[in-house]
Length: 186
Length: 186
DNA sequence: TTATCCATGTAAGAAGTTACATGATTGA
DNA sequence: TCAATCATGTAACTTCTTACATGGATAA
Image 1 (cartoon, rainbow over the protein chains, first blue to last red):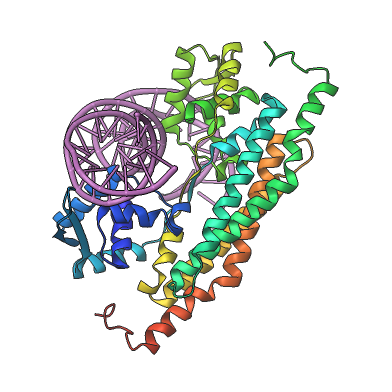
Image 2: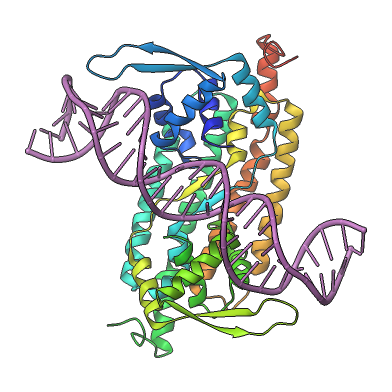
């Protein structure tokens, strides 16, 4: 599964331009898949070459024409074929967690600031997700959205309840073992 | 932050060969960062060129020599510099969630099987993580491990309590609106 | 005045994966 | 007998990101 399939999927929910696809990916998708314009536009052109989507042109005022893409019949088949394949493993890359893993190498103040920022971020993500939950969502969207909400809540709770593990303990441990500043400072 | 930094971080917790680094990344790291041999070995060589790590050779029986890497003083400085930078956004790519988003395009039986597999996977991940939680972990490791456990539990609970959203409702909705098989069949 | 939104696209480059080469040992 | 473990490494390839090009309209 790649950006091509993702575009096919988004288009299966309704026609859209490349620009709109990108915007839609910033909705509930955002938290489990991302794509840039630089990958979406070429993906759409390749999908069209393969006959999986087609487009009509809509004129714009002082702007490049808008290309509205639609999935073709064979595009729908191809999407189902792709979705029927066993999904690959999740790929996660969190620089925040890597940083926390090595929190004892950083000044406690810095760790606290990171933690504040992270908690604020999780709160805003949560608000954002909760605001999307209106009646009329497809079952798939509702499921995935609920998943995002549940996971984000768990993260937020965990951060609030366990930040002390990396904020004070690490520094205290250093002080107590007399290593404070011996390697890190200056 | 890339595989180079990650290797530097792993090595800051103790000397290791490339092979061992890979194994260690399959511990608590696994769930928020991944790297293959094809990226680790070149990364180590580049780190060494830059003077951030150095290695000693350990002879093996009928095997390539084992190269044990250690972080140098400037390597530690570089690691701290990297960790001090604001962490980039999390990147997540979950084919499972994409598939669930479009669950209504798939046979309900298939969705159920996917769900069973996913729940089993989450359970084994959870067991695996819980088994790692022994006294003596660094605060950073404990924090990150607890995070993984909390998030995995939340996922597991959500899946168990909400799988019905994509297993029965979607199909029922199709049947009820008389669209069953009109597009998907044949 | 500066940034953001709209709108498409290309080109260069980064980063990483997969597959291969080599090969003995150990366990199922 | 087949797969996995240990052990390092390279090369080809895929995939995606970043930066650029274009440019009017609108909001801060």
